[in-house]
Length: 345
Ligand SMILES: [Zn+2]
Image 1 (cartoon, protein in one colour):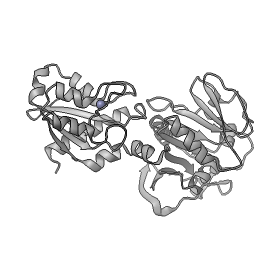
Image 2 (cartoon, protein in one colour):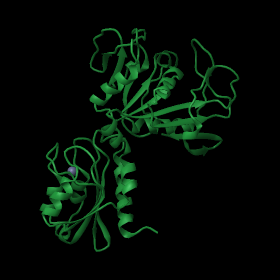
Image 3 (spheres, rainbow, N blue to C red):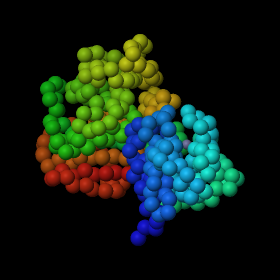
Image 4 (cartoon, rainbow, N blue to C red):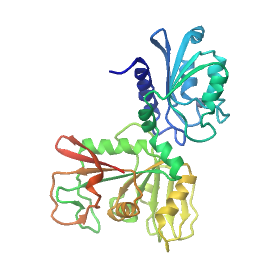
């Protein structure tokens, strides 16, 4: 059984998730305001640069006089610094909210306990650590990004029952191993990521647009590796006015949407890429293929999660699927005959 406080914090987590894909490099945060055992206001951080969860929750209340007798629940410690918006801890004090319940402390940035301190010094009663682990899981990408100084990496591929990604081909269409449902799930993953990476061969042979079409949400930054600039500009991933990064060893000038970034291909390019993406505030990336790229991320142990879709189709020959240690499997989902194996580090 959940306690009252846990119920309100889990509602905060639920609200926070509405900001997924839109708030990075900020974390997702949700807040609810409770007056006499009833939720009277709710809010979440909806978009980077816009109002924080606490501000939106307070704004949602018509009769502000109730705040003096209310408790605000928030999944993450209220901020104490002047960033793009004034500090939320200060707002809570100004609105005379007497009690704050916090899911977890902000482990990073200019906050680190200062929000809690600011509130307590002003006489606000503060409780910290309700559903702490769930609140940390909510912001796991934010935590990893700030700890490891690289994006949170999700690998994704579909393989045949006998372990192939595709048939051997030099042109023409790939074998479709995904179903309508799993395609939709991939588009959801794209909407939740800040960036999406494909290798040269995948960009050329599959000609993907890498946009979000079968789910609601924004398009991630498209990232492609093209060592020798062999990819034609007519490919889908260079169209549609979506920010696109191209990692290459050559010098090239881009345009409004496509940026060329030079790497040293004499040494491992993945750490170089991760450093650049970190500097660009790309907090999470989805690796969609092909096999060479996926395998190099696995070899460098540069991944945090993997989703492998297991089709019932047998191909008998073709491009081998990447190998991933089955020990790290944490979950199997079944969707109408398709199994999605979820691996975690
Ligand atoms: Zn804030």
